[in-house]
Length: 273
Image 1 (cartoon, helix red, strand yellow):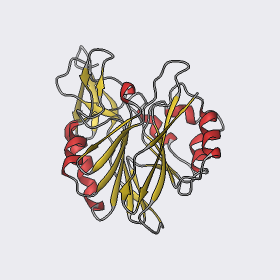
Image 2 (cartoon, rainbow, N blue to C red; image 1 turned 120 degrees about the vertical axis):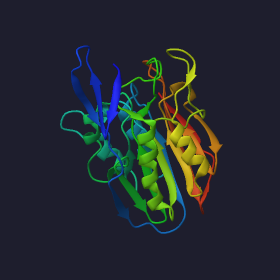
Image 3 (cartoon, one colour; image 1 turned 90 degrees about the vertical axis):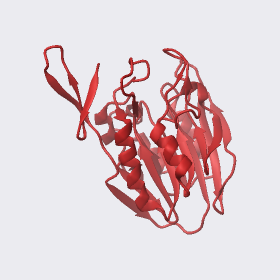
Image 4 (cartoon, one colour; image 1 turned 30 degrees about the vertical axis):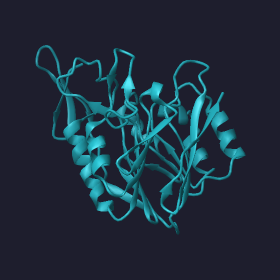
């Protein structure tokens, strides 16, 4: 499907010139503010939990020291909202401040509404301000211009110029230590995919933002499963790819990390079968 953009609408043009709006792009609209004292946090994060047992994740969290915050970087978020249940809310209840999540590129645009509930924050459109910290998000994946569709995979794709516009809104949070939850990694960083051909599929605007930013401390992403379980520095931020593989029986990757007195410590990885 060839996609085009006009304003904040992504649309397709059919063979006879018919136009169909596929979805509307979204950006940061508001902030939720929660009181937090100090410059330390304990964070649990994961991404691309597509085949793994969510009940096992809940049991794992119940067995651990209670985290301050849980971060989920997207894909198959409908699994967390089966009929008459809200597993996002259940996970959030196992933390001090709640759960921040974004939709992935394989999630339908309507899935955004599933990131809801008590202490559940859809940080693509609603940032969480937590004392001296702020959590922001980027849903979906980049829509590469003039691409042959080897990189434009999924249902929720953002043109790069719109991503740049979205990230400029984060300037309002320059006085906070910024935590970014992005489904896609920064371009060229933990983003080298081999399915459909070897190439980088990360976000150029995100990379540019991280390289230029003086206040971002952590970027949690997923999307590229083969790079899951890895972390590296970019600019002042630690970038963590928390993706799990999507083959039946693949373990779920979960990291626990501490920010202590403003310093981000190395993540500890857990593999849940």
